[in-house]
Length: 376
Ligand code: PLP
Image (cartoon, rainbow, N blue to C red; front, side, top):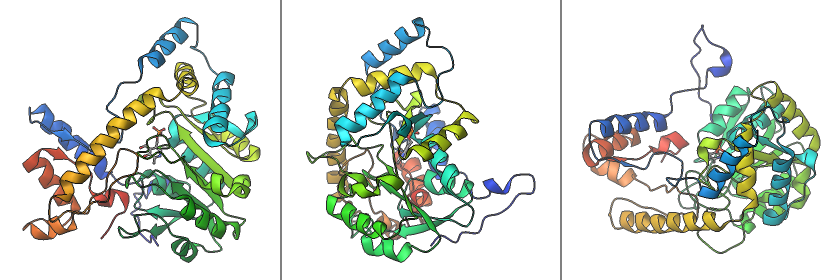
Protein backbone atom coordinates (compact mmCIF):
# COMPACT_ATOMS: atom_id res chain seq x y z
CA UNK A 1 0.00 0.00 0.00
CA UNK A 2 1.14 3.50 -0.66
CA UNK A 3 0.70 5.50 2.54
CA UNK A 4 2.89 8.43 1.58
CA UNK A 5 2.10 11.57 3.58
CA UNK A 6 2.08 14.68 1.44
CA UNK A 7 3.09 18.17 2.52
CA UNK A 8 0.44 20.85 2.16
CA UNK A 9 1.47 24.36 1.09
CA UNK A 10 -1.11 26.87 2.34
CA UNK A 11 -1.01 28.85 -0.92
CA UNK A 12 -2.09 25.90 -3.08
CA UNK A 13 -5.04 23.56 -3.37
CA UNK A 14 -4.94 20.25 -1.49
CA UNK A 15 -5.55 18.62 -4.87
CA UNK A 16 -1.92 19.23 -5.74
CA UNK A 17 -0.34 17.99 -2.52
CA UNK A 18 0.76 14.70 -4.05
CA UNK A 19 2.51 16.32 -7.00
CA UNK A 20 6.27 16.28 -6.69
CA UNK A 21 8.96 17.22 -9.21
CA UNK A 22 9.54 14.23 -11.48
CA UNK A 23 13.05 12.79 -11.53
CA UNK A 24 12.49 12.13 -15.25
CA UNK A 25 12.35 15.90 -15.78
CA UNK A 26 15.27 16.43 -13.38
CA UNK A 27 17.55 14.05 -15.31
CA UNK A 28 16.23 15.43 -18.60
CA UNK A 29 17.04 19.02 -17.59
CA UNK A 30 20.55 18.04 -16.45
CA UNK A 31 21.14 16.08 -19.68
CA UNK A 32 20.02 19.06 -21.74
CA UNK A 33 22.24 21.44 -19.80
CA UNK A 34 25.27 19.14 -20.33
CA UNK A 35 24.51 18.84 -24.06
CA UNK A 36 24.40 22.61 -24.30
CA UNK A 37 27.89 22.67 -22.80
CA UNK A 38 28.94 20.50 -25.80
CA UNK A 39 29.10 17.24 -23.83
CA UNK A 40 28.17 14.21 -25.93
CA UNK A 41 25.15 12.86 -24.02
CA UNK A 42 23.26 9.67 -24.92
CA UNK A 43 19.64 10.51 -24.12
CA UNK A 44 17.70 7.48 -22.94
CA UNK A 45 15.44 9.40 -20.59
CA UNK A 46 12.57 10.63 -22.73
CA UNK A 47 9.55 8.39 -23.37
CA UNK A 48 9.12 9.13 -27.04
CA UNK A 49 10.21 7.72 -30.39
CA UNK A 50 13.16 9.51 -31.95
CA UNK A 51 11.58 9.13 -35.41
CA UNK A 52 9.84 11.88 -37.34
CA UNK A 53 6.09 11.46 -37.92
CA UNK A 54 5.63 9.61 -41.26
CA UNK A 55 5.55 12.04 -44.18
CA UNK A 56 2.10 11.12 -45.51
CA UNK A 57 0.62 12.10 -42.12
CA UNK A 58 2.39 15.47 -42.19
CA UNK A 59 1.22 16.03 -45.77
CA UNK A 60 -2.39 15.24 -44.77
CA UNK A 61 -2.13 17.78 -41.94
CA UNK A 62 -0.78 20.49 -44.30
CA UNK A 63 -3.65 19.81 -46.66
CA UNK A 64 -6.13 19.91 -43.76
CA UNK A 65 -4.99 23.43 -42.86
CA UNK A 66 -5.52 24.53 -46.46
CA UNK A 67 -8.93 22.84 -46.39
CA UNK A 68 -10.00 24.92 -43.40
CA UNK A 69 -9.62 22.56 -40.44
CA UNK A 70 -8.91 25.54 -38.23
CA UNK A 71 -12.09 25.78 -36.17
CA UNK A 72 -13.73 24.18 -33.17
CA UNK A 73 -14.72 20.55 -33.66
CA UNK A 74 -17.27 18.43 -31.77
CA UNK A 75 -15.96 17.70 -28.24
CA UNK A 76 -15.73 13.96 -28.83
CA UNK A 77 -13.85 14.47 -32.09
CA UNK A 78 -14.41 15.05 -35.80
CA UNK A 79 -16.87 12.44 -37.15
CA UNK A 80 -14.12 11.04 -39.42
CA UNK A 81 -11.81 10.58 -36.42
CA UNK A 82 -14.50 8.83 -34.41
CA UNK A 83 -15.12 6.49 -37.34
CA UNK A 84 -11.38 5.80 -37.65
CA UNK A 85 -11.18 5.05 -33.91
CA UNK A 86 -14.15 2.66 -34.06
CA UNK A 87 -12.69 0.95 -37.12
CA UNK A 88 -9.29 0.65 -35.45
CA UNK A 89 -10.88 -1.14 -32.46
CA UNK A 90 -12.89 -3.40 -34.77
CA UNK A 91 -10.06 -4.37 -37.12
CA UNK A 92 -7.11 -4.46 -34.74
CA UNK A 93 -8.70 -5.48 -31.45
CA UNK A 94 -11.93 -7.25 -32.41
CA UNK A 95 -13.76 -4.81 -30.13
CA UNK A 96 -17.02 -3.30 -31.35
CA UNK A 97 -18.15 0.14 -30.26
CA UNK A 98 -20.82 2.63 -31.33
CA UNK A 99 -20.16 6.32 -31.92
CA UNK A 100 -21.30 7.26 -28.42
CA UNK A 101 -18.85 4.76 -26.91
CA UNK A 102 -15.66 6.40 -28.22
CA UNK A 103 -14.07 9.83 -27.88
CA UNK A 104 -10.75 11.43 -28.67
CA UNK A 105 -8.71 13.41 -26.13
CA UNK A 106 -5.60 15.54 -25.93
CA UNK A 107 -3.26 12.55 -25.76
CA UNK A 108 -3.96 9.29 -23.94
CA UNK A 109 -2.97 11.22 -20.82
CA UNK A 110 -6.10 13.34 -20.99
CA UNK A 111 -8.26 10.25 -21.52
CA UNK A 112 -6.79 8.88 -18.31
CA UNK A 113 -7.41 12.18 -16.55
CA UNK A 114 -11.02 12.34 -17.80
CA UNK A 115 -11.59 8.77 -16.63
CA UNK A 116 -10.20 9.31 -13.13
CA UNK A 117 -12.02 12.62 -12.63
CA UNK A 118 -15.25 11.03 -13.85
CA UNK A 119 -15.14 7.82 -11.82
CA UNK A 120 -13.19 8.44 -8.63
CA UNK A 121 -14.29 9.85 -5.30
CA UNK A 122 -12.08 10.79 -2.38
CA UNK A 123 -11.60 7.65 -0.25
CA UNK A 124 -11.80 5.39 -3.32
CA UNK A 125 -8.83 3.14 -3.92
CA UNK A 126 -7.08 2.64 -7.25
CA UNK A 127 -4.91 -0.44 -7.67
CA UNK A 128 -1.83 0.24 -9.79
CA UNK A 129 0.70 -2.53 -10.41
CA UNK A 130 4.21 -1.22 -9.82
CA UNK A 131 6.64 -0.43 -11.29
CA UNK A 132 4.39 1.92 -13.22
CA UNK A 133 4.28 5.16 -15.21
CA UNK A 134 4.38 8.05 -12.71
CA UNK A 135 1.33 9.77 -14.19
CA UNK A 136 -1.11 7.09 -12.96
CA UNK A 137 -0.74 7.80 -9.23
CA UNK A 138 -0.45 11.54 -9.85
CA UNK A 139 -3.80 11.68 -11.65
CA UNK A 140 -5.49 9.29 -9.21
CA UNK A 141 -4.31 11.55 -6.37
CA UNK A 142 -5.52 14.72 -8.09
CA UNK A 143 -8.91 13.01 -8.32
CA UNK A 144 -8.66 12.54 -4.54
CA UNK A 145 -8.31 8.77 -4.59
CA UNK A 146 -5.81 6.67 -2.68
CA UNK A 147 -3.30 4.59 -4.60
CA UNK A 148 -2.83 0.95 -3.66
CA UNK A 149 0.55 -0.17 -4.90
CA UNK A 150 0.32 -3.74 -6.25
CA UNK A 151 3.97 -4.56 -6.22
CA UNK A 152 5.30 -6.95 -8.85
CA UNK A 153 8.78 -8.42 -8.74
CA UNK A 154 11.68 -8.92 -11.10
CA UNK A 155 11.30 -12.70 -10.65
CA UNK A 156 7.64 -12.71 -11.74
CA UNK A 157 8.61 -10.71 -14.83
CA UNK A 158 7.03 -7.56 -13.38
CA UNK A 159 3.50 -8.67 -14.18
CA UNK A 160 0.60 -8.52 -11.75
CA UNK A 161 -0.46 -11.94 -10.49
CA UNK A 162 -4.04 -12.83 -9.58
CA UNK A 163 -2.84 -13.48 -6.00
CA UNK A 164 -1.33 -10.01 -5.58
CA UNK A 165 -4.46 -8.46 -7.06
CA UNK A 166 -6.65 -10.36 -4.58
CA UNK A 167 -4.54 -9.09 -1.68
CA UNK A 168 -4.94 -5.49 -2.87
CA UNK A 169 -8.70 -5.54 -3.47
CA UNK A 170 -10.87 -4.09 -0.72
CA UNK A 171 -14.46 -2.84 -0.41
CA UNK A 172 -13.11 0.61 -1.30
CA UNK A 173 -11.44 -0.47 -4.57
CA UNK A 174 -12.96 1.47 -7.45
CA UNK A 175 -10.42 1.05 -10.26
CA UNK A 176 -7.59 -1.17 -11.46
CA UNK A 177 -5.13 0.13 -14.05
CA UNK A 178 -3.46 -2.32 -16.45
CA UNK A 179 -0.76 -1.39 -18.96
CA UNK A 180 0.58 -3.86 -21.50
CA UNK A 181 3.13 -3.60 -23.12
CA UNK A 182 4.33 -1.85 -20.03
CA UNK A 183 6.07 1.38 -19.25
CA UNK A 184 8.69 1.05 -17.72
CA UNK A 185 9.31 -2.71 -17.87
CA UNK A 186 8.67 -3.41 -21.56
CA UNK A 187 6.94 -6.63 -20.48
CA UNK A 188 3.71 -7.96 -21.99
CA UNK A 189 0.93 -9.64 -20.01
CA UNK A 190 0.23 -13.15 -21.30
CA UNK A 191 -3.34 -14.17 -22.12
CA UNK A 192 -3.21 -16.59 -19.18
CA UNK A 193 -2.24 -13.85 -16.72
CA UNK A 194 -4.89 -11.48 -18.10
CA UNK A 195 -7.47 -14.21 -17.87
CA UNK A 196 -6.54 -14.97 -14.23
CA UNK A 197 -6.80 -11.23 -13.43
CA UNK A 198 -10.13 -11.03 -15.27
CA UNK A 199 -11.53 -13.98 -13.33
CA UNK A 200 -10.71 -12.24 -10.05
CA UNK A 201 -12.28 -8.98 -11.24
CA UNK A 202 -15.49 -10.76 -12.28
CA UNK A 203 -16.08 -11.22 -8.54
CA UNK A 204 -15.89 -7.45 -7.94
CA UNK A 205 -18.64 -5.88 -10.06
CA UNK A 206 -18.15 -2.37 -8.63
CA UNK A 207 -14.53 -2.14 -9.84
CA UNK A 208 -13.72 -0.35 -13.11
CA UNK A 209 -10.80 -1.46 -15.27
CA UNK A 210 -8.65 0.94 -17.18
CA UNK A 211 -6.67 -0.77 -19.91
CA UNK A 212 -3.86 1.47 -21.18
CA UNK A 213 -2.90 -0.03 -24.56
CA UNK A 214 -0.74 2.86 -25.78
CA UNK A 215 2.22 0.55 -26.61
CA UNK A 216 -0.01 -2.05 -28.29
CA UNK A 217 1.79 -2.00 -31.64
CA UNK A 218 5.33 -1.83 -30.28
CA UNK A 219 5.73 -5.59 -29.73
CA UNK A 220 8.72 -7.71 -30.67
CA UNK A 221 6.97 -11.08 -31.05
CA UNK A 222 4.47 -12.28 -33.63
CA UNK A 223 1.77 -13.11 -31.10
CA UNK A 224 -1.56 -11.32 -31.52
CA UNK A 225 -2.14 -8.48 -29.07
CA UNK A 226 -4.45 -9.14 -26.14
CA UNK A 227 -5.93 -6.79 -23.57
CA UNK A 228 -8.21 -7.79 -20.73
CA UNK A 229 -11.38 -7.49 -22.85
CA UNK A 230 -10.03 -9.90 -25.45
CA UNK A 231 -9.77 -12.62 -22.81
CA UNK A 232 -12.65 -11.56 -20.57
CA UNK A 233 -15.33 -9.91 -22.77
CA UNK A 234 -17.90 -9.82 -19.98
CA UNK A 235 -15.92 -7.01 -18.33
CA UNK A 236 -16.84 -4.67 -21.20
CA UNK A 237 -19.53 -2.81 -19.22
CA UNK A 238 -16.89 -1.54 -16.79
CA UNK A 239 -13.71 -1.34 -18.85
CA UNK A 240 -12.26 1.73 -20.50
CA UNK A 241 -9.72 1.01 -23.23
CA UNK A 242 -7.27 3.86 -23.73
CA UNK A 243 -4.95 4.23 -26.70
CA UNK A 244 -3.53 6.90 -28.99
CA UNK A 245 -1.25 7.70 -31.88
CA UNK A 246 1.67 9.20 -29.90
CA UNK A 247 3.93 6.19 -29.58
CA UNK A 248 3.01 3.92 -32.49
CA UNK A 249 3.03 6.62 -35.17
CA UNK A 250 5.74 8.85 -33.64
CA UNK A 251 3.16 11.59 -33.04
CA UNK A 252 3.81 12.60 -29.43
CA UNK A 253 3.58 16.33 -30.17
CA UNK A 254 0.28 16.16 -32.03
CA UNK A 255 -1.56 15.26 -28.81
CA UNK A 256 -4.18 12.77 -29.90
CA UNK A 257 -5.37 9.93 -27.71
CA UNK A 258 -8.69 8.12 -27.52
CA UNK A 259 -10.81 6.01 -25.25
CA UNK A 260 -13.63 3.49 -25.69
CA UNK A 261 -16.08 2.34 -23.05
CA UNK A 262 -19.68 2.37 -21.86
CA UNK A 263 -21.73 5.23 -23.38
CA UNK A 264 -22.77 6.74 -20.03
CA UNK A 265 -19.14 7.08 -18.90
CA UNK A 266 -18.00 8.44 -22.27
CA UNK A 267 -20.83 11.01 -22.17
CA UNK A 268 -19.68 12.26 -18.75
CA UNK A 269 -16.03 12.32 -19.84
CA UNK A 270 -17.05 14.39 -22.87
CA UNK A 271 -18.91 16.85 -20.64
CA UNK A 272 -15.80 17.20 -18.49
CA UNK A 273 -13.56 17.65 -21.53
CA UNK A 274 -16.06 20.19 -22.90
CA UNK A 275 -15.45 22.37 -19.83
CA UNK A 276 -11.67 21.97 -19.85
CA UNK A 277 -9.75 21.93 -23.15
CA UNK A 278 -12.74 21.00 -25.40
CA UNK A 279 -10.71 18.98 -27.88
CA UNK A 280 -7.29 18.65 -29.42
CA UNK A 281 -6.44 20.82 -32.45
CA UNK A 282 -8.59 20.10 -35.53
CA UNK A 283 -5.47 19.65 -37.66
CA UNK A 284 -4.14 17.03 -35.23
CA UNK A 285 -7.44 15.18 -35.44
CA UNK A 286 -7.13 14.99 -39.23
CA UNK A 287 -3.52 13.79 -38.89
CA UNK A 288 -4.59 11.08 -36.40
CA UNK A 289 -7.41 9.98 -38.73
CA UNK A 290 -4.88 9.59 -41.54
CA UNK A 291 -2.57 7.60 -39.26
CA UNK A 292 -5.30 5.23 -38.10
CA UNK A 293 -6.63 4.72 -41.63
CA UNK A 294 -3.30 4.17 -43.30
CA UNK A 295 -2.23 0.79 -41.98
CA UNK A 296 0.73 -0.26 -39.91
CA UNK A 297 3.63 -0.31 -42.41
CA UNK A 298 5.56 2.54 -40.80
CA UNK A 299 4.66 1.36 -37.33
CA UNK A 300 6.23 -2.02 -38.09
CA UNK A 301 9.33 -0.37 -39.57
CA UNK A 302 9.89 1.67 -36.40
CA UNK A 303 9.11 -1.31 -34.17
CA UNK A 304 11.80 -3.38 -35.89
CA UNK A 305 14.33 -0.73 -34.95
CA UNK A 306 13.07 -0.64 -31.35
CA UNK A 307 13.43 -4.44 -31.23
CA UNK A 308 17.04 -4.31 -32.51
CA UNK A 309 17.89 -1.67 -29.92
CA UNK A 310 16.22 -3.66 -27.15
CA UNK A 311 18.32 -6.71 -28.09
CA UNK A 312 21.52 -4.66 -28.12
CA UNK A 313 20.79 -3.07 -24.74
CA UNK A 314 19.78 -6.39 -23.13
CA UNK A 315 22.81 -8.31 -24.41
CA UNK A 316 25.26 -5.56 -23.54
CA UNK A 317 23.90 -5.03 -20.02
CA UNK A 318 23.72 -8.76 -19.30
CA UNK A 319 27.45 -8.97 -20.06
CA UNK A 320 28.08 -6.70 -17.06
CA UNK A 321 28.30 -8.88 -13.97
CA UNK A 322 26.58 -6.52 -11.54
CA UNK A 323 23.60 -5.75 -13.78
CA UNK A 324 20.63 -8.00 -14.44
CA UNK A 325 18.03 -7.36 -17.10
CA UNK A 326 15.02 -9.18 -18.48
CA UNK A 327 14.52 -8.71 -22.21
CA UNK A 328 11.69 -6.30 -22.99
CA UNK A 329 8.87 -7.79 -25.08
CA UNK A 330 7.75 -4.44 -26.42
CA UNK A 331 7.53 -0.63 -25.96
CA UNK A 332 10.85 1.21 -26.07
CA UNK A 333 11.72 0.75 -22.41
CA UNK A 334 13.92 -1.62 -20.50
CA UNK A 335 14.23 -1.89 -16.72
CA UNK A 336 17.60 -3.30 -15.65
CA UNK A 337 18.35 -4.10 -12.01
CA UNK A 338 21.26 -1.84 -11.05
CA UNK A 339 21.15 -2.71 -7.32
CA UNK A 340 24.29 -4.89 -7.61
CA UNK A 341 26.14 -2.05 -9.30
CA UNK A 342 24.95 0.47 -6.71
CA UNK A 343 26.18 -1.80 -3.89
CA UNK A 344 29.55 -2.26 -5.59
CA UNK A 345 30.29 1.46 -5.99
CA UNK A 346 31.53 3.45 -3.07
CA UNK A 347 29.78 6.79 -2.55
CA UNK A 348 26.65 5.73 -4.44
CA UNK A 349 23.76 4.95 -2.14
CA UNK A 350 20.68 4.89 -4.35
CA UNK A 351 19.28 4.99 -7.87
CA UNK A 352 19.16 8.80 -8.03
CA UNK A 353 22.87 9.02 -7.28
CA UNK A 354 23.53 6.20 -9.74
CA UNK A 355 21.65 8.09 -12.49
CA UNK A 356 23.64 11.25 -11.71
CA UNK A 357 26.89 9.29 -11.80
CA UNK A 358 26.03 7.64 -15.13
CA UNK A 359 25.23 11.04 -16.58
CA UNK A 360 28.27 12.87 -15.21
CA UNK A 361 30.87 10.16 -15.74
CA UNK A 362 29.63 8.27 -18.80
CA UNK A 363 27.34 10.80 -20.45
CA UNK A 364 24.33 8.46 -20.41
CA UNK A 365 20.96 9.84 -19.31
CA UNK A 366 18.79 7.15 -17.68
CA UNK A 367 15.72 7.50 -15.47
CA UNK A 368 16.06 6.24 -11.86
CA UNK A 369 13.75 3.30 -11.04
CA UNK A 370 12.16 5.14 -8.12
CA UNK A 371 10.44 7.43 -10.67
CA UNK A 372 8.35 4.34 -11.46
CA UNK A 373 7.82 3.29 -7.83
CA UNK A 374 10.45 0.60 -8.21
CA UNK A 375 12.19 -0.22 -4.94
CA UNK A 376 14.38 -3.26 -4.43
N1 PLP B 1 0.34 5.69 -21.12
C1 PLP B 1 1.62 5.37 -20.88
C2 PLP B 1 1.92 4.09 -20.20
C3 PLP B 1 2.66 6.23 -21.26
O1 PLP B 1 3.94 5.88 -21.03
C4 PLP B 1 2.34 7.46 -21.89
C5 PLP B 1 3.40 8.42 -22.25
O2 PLP B 1 4.52 8.37 -21.79
C6 PLP B 1 0.99 7.75 -22.11
C7 PLP B 1 0.02 6.85 -21.72
C8 PLP B 1 0.55 9.07 -22.70
O3 PLP B 1 0.65 9.18 -24.03
P1 PLP B 1 0.05 10.46 -24.78
O4 PLP B 1 1.20 11.11 -25.46
O5 PLP B 1 -0.96 9.90 -25.74
O6 PLP B 1 -0.60 11.36 -23.78
